[in-house]
Amino acid sequence: MLPKANSRQTYPALLLTLLLFPTLAQASIDQAINEAVAPATAFISSIIFYAVEINGAKVPLVVAWLVAAAIFFTVYFRFLNIRGFMHAIDIVRGRDHNPKAPGEVTHFQALTTAVSGTVGIGNIGGVAVAISLGGPGATFWLIVAGLLGMSTKFIECTLGTIYRRHNPDGSVSGGPMYYLQHGFAEKGMPGIGRFLGRFYALGIVLGCLGIGNMFQANQAYLQFVTVTGGQESFFAGKGWLVGLVMAVIVALVIIGGIKSIAKVTSKLVPFMALLYCLSALVIILMNAEAIPFAVNAIVQGAFSPEGVAGGAIGVIVIGVQRAVFSNEAGIGSAPIAHSAVQTKEPITQGYVSLLEPFIDTVVICTLTALVIVTTFYYDPSFNAGLDGIGMTSAAFERNIGWSPLLIAIAGMLFAFSTMIAWAYYGLKGFTYLVGEHAWASNLFKLVFCTFIVIGCSIPLTAVLDFSDALVFLICVPNIIGLYLLAPVVKQALAAYDEKVRGL
Image (cartoon, rainbow, N blue to C red; front, top):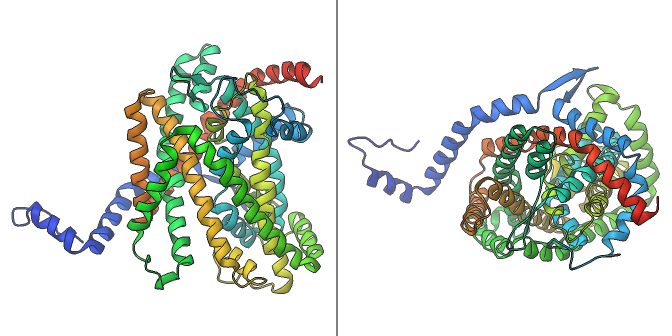
């Protein structure tokens, strides 16, 4: 422990201790921060991640809350997640795009920005964790939940575009804070709307500094050390240095706002997604003889799991939970990016948003799962003692010895793209609270980049857990708003389909 300042221990002496013993200082500061935040973390986590037992399986209420909404909106919009899929692709390809329409980015750029915020370490490591806990059958329910989540994305991204604010400088601000405020006002509840909007904005600001920043920075740093030689690397133990470089790179991207972020994500997201997906497909094709085994294990395990707590319900919960945590449908973060789109028809961006959970969960997560499950065919016990990303890396390495390097690079790219997207989410939450001022924007960007350095240097476990819980807590007011405003979207969808699609 560091010495306490008193009559015999002056502050200069304390400062000297910090300078002479930086490792001790960091450990003590880390411990102090964790201990200070831990009570609040435990309290919020106990509420938001509270689980009830059903047939021996623990079902987190927040997962049930999000999945129930996804099922409701899928039925409410008559399975638009399926019948609107091809129209979504047409819009993304630029059909009928009007560059003079209000907004800042194209449909494709808005989509890639939102995808960059959801495609992260969880797509590589989180899927492996789900399979290790729920068996191959968890993959089936992961896919089902991903398809259902498309409906939730549709309504929240449509509302984000309908209720967005056009600022005097030509920029756009949107997201749950705006449709909660104005939507509730239209229903005669302006006070509740303002409160929920501010609550959401505060949650997204604090949340972005944790799971959207420090966690991603820390994971990117660990992957960078792995790529450069592990514990023998020059950068091992120099998280502050790597964090500083990362902060500068992120700053160069986010300083230009959504247009700059969109330019980067529109190139980075397709590249990193194709890089990872093609690599996974190569591994799956190399394991071609194991594909029938994998399909059978996934389907059979989904309904007749073995060795999983809670049986079928347990494996459903594990698969669904992974999908929900991966694509963030219902959290409300994606509408902040989608609302910046250039369009006079908000419904068009709702259609485009259907592709986000499909890419993130149905495609990328499923490919990861198939790489892992086909590996079981050759070595049923290969995952013993491996963590999430380690299991995925080992599955790739079984076929291609240098593939862990590829996984590390993909992980770093995923983490970087997530940071720049969440920087925009947090910025819009902050300016909603304090106003659209240049000083507010610059202050937030400075703080965000500072937290990147902290994330690489200090593993603040309690802070990250607090951020994680807070992000899922704000899904409660967001989903309430979606239920309340669903008729608004349904009416707009009917008008759009009749005018544009002739349905």
